[in-house]
Image 1 (cartoon, rainbow, N blue to C red):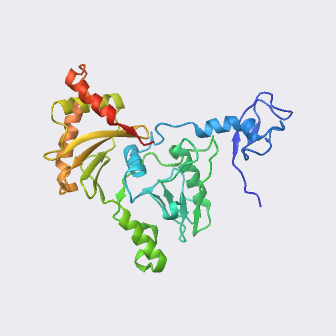
Image 2 (cartoon, rainbow, N blue to C red; image 1 turned 30 degrees about the vertical axis):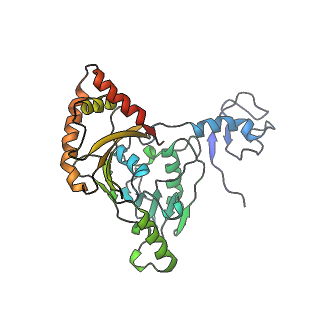
Length: 326
């Protein structure tokens, strides 16, 4: 039985007898005949517009959502975490809750538990250039999936809703960082055999991570050679790099003895500065230095004078070491 396909509203001036300036053309396979009746394959007709819309990169897909910086962190940095989500509309009958998770078993995009509860996986490959639209499509399908079933990935309709359309934008977004993936199961303590072994293997691979409590979207992690602090910041990139350069040139960019601001990377339109920390420095020990740095950064962001030659060199060093994850 053929699967029902998504429908997108597209226009094409004079592509065949059925084409009209306001015609609704269903999305079909790239090699299938275009539904507009032109006689051409979809990819060579209306599919060109659909392909452009579906692959156009949205630089900040989580912009406008509460906790944008934490969305980025959970997508790129945090191994195991969950966040309860609140929808704009009431939940359907039989769906007691919706929970965002960093990753789900088998890298499923979504899952409807036996209880009817919905889990939405954040760390998945996406079919379009808009992570928000992909996640919204998965969420909508998970809400109506049969209990006890995963939701597979697919290409969303170019005009489909985004998370910003589905979620309550007044609800708080507070991640709960986990030490492992027990949240995959309703009763992890009762897991046996292959299920228990898979869970143990996943837990062993997870890097210990802690979200700091005194500043927003800053995550401490522990690795064998050194610890790190990775802090997702909401500031405009150029202004932030200038501020970091000012602090670095003044010798005030570290978080204390043995720590060092080593650079930054871009992720989903935001800049993420990274500090190396001594192996023995715990997340609790980073709290006060991070809060103090936040105050210094605020002051540096308020400065508008041109960078000095030393500050420009510091900024150049950050720029040369910067990478883009997404």
